[in-house]
Image (cartoon, rainbow, N blue to C red):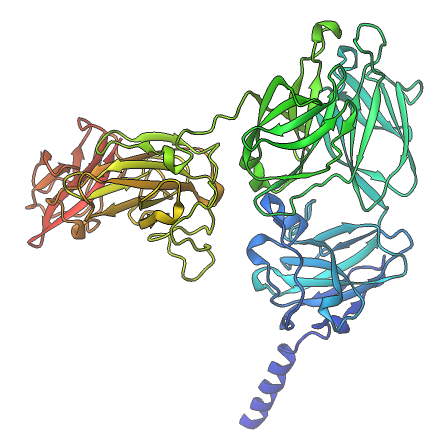
Length: 640
């Protein structure tokens, strides 16, 4: 009986943990297009040696146009194939009733299923962009496939999840994604209707807005017409534009010009200009693709200049055109200066915050709209530059004038912090990185050796600000950003020559402070001793993972009377505090002393008192000292 049970258990376990038949791409299960969804499972599936992974995406949309950035791994994949229909357009989905797997899928073409070097990525998705009862299902809509060709689908579980699922491939209509931009500054054209093949597409399309991405049928003629906003049908269009869209490209259409010929100097007819090849997402980490549009009807051809670098981004762009250079990769904030075609400044400049939006990972258009001389053009809108955000359907005005870069953006212009002064407020919104700028040991957060207490843990330099201070007589200081604000990381260093980063020596670093900071759980602090009194030391600050915004930083002196080894052995909350602090566990016989950063006693509380009024103290760093079991014990807190 025992032997029979053992054999049964063995057979059952082999059955239960057998690899799926389609564990390898050459064993892919064929899906008949437009048939009902088929059952699948990746339970006990494996990953093949050198198995392909879809290209990484950048920014906030990684889970939509690739696999989520924190799981670019193949862990338990299975494979399917299908033959592309005549339309060349399909929808591949695991969003089917009863399908519970948190899936990630990728579509590939391959000339040899045994040779991963012949695989070419077509599309990928982790989390479905639309609505699904399983929000972590996956879906790919793709067109432009070669009719009759065989394609491979890779299905993996997010972070190794395994489960049964259902997958389907259905024919869809070949489409192109299109963004419309209303840039006609004629007051009479403030609202227009947009129709395609007679059907309303955008009702009451407003000046200085964009449509966001819309799907239009491709591979056949599309007749786009503009109408008065009160139009009831497709009759009497203000403008008609016929085109055939390529399903493998995205498009941007811009409405320019004026309805009337009088009242404008010069008069430009209402027009629709088309850009073929709109780039939706970034292809380089840490940068954004940007192209430029000239829609100012009374302005001459112009050059667009990066004023900080003195480089020409756009040369001789004229009215009604996109820049001939196409997309430019931008990663830093800079001042966009405008020159005429002869190279003479026209006195216009705008701040283009490319570095601030690089983390979003999407493509932008920058468009000039309005009139150089509104009074000669029916008092229409004055000239202004805008960034076109297709994700929100909005046009965002750029700030006129030069970018307001922080004065301490560079190490040679570090801001001085006076030891024991009140916290200093800083803003790294327009901070940049210097050429050859170095940082302390800086490991990716996924690295098992990453140490956010003694190093930085995001693996990159993003938007640094620099400070310096003169070491106090004690040679011991506390550097802290525990005052609210952004997620900071700080480093302490000496500098031999501020123009040469080879002379920078890092003495310490911190990303997330060890002790709890109630104002900001991701604040930073460095406590150090042994500094040479009177010598200048430098502090480098950065926003974790490129975070931008304000923070406060303070340097306080620590006197020898404060035993650093005893810090943190008792708890104090809240921290920072406004009116009261509480020490939850303390003997009734223990006296309580509160010391300032100089080691001087500023408050003496009754023995055993757990709740202490600190409202009369000035803002700054303080230390609570109590005696526990015959040992002097300290805790640091910040008074706001």
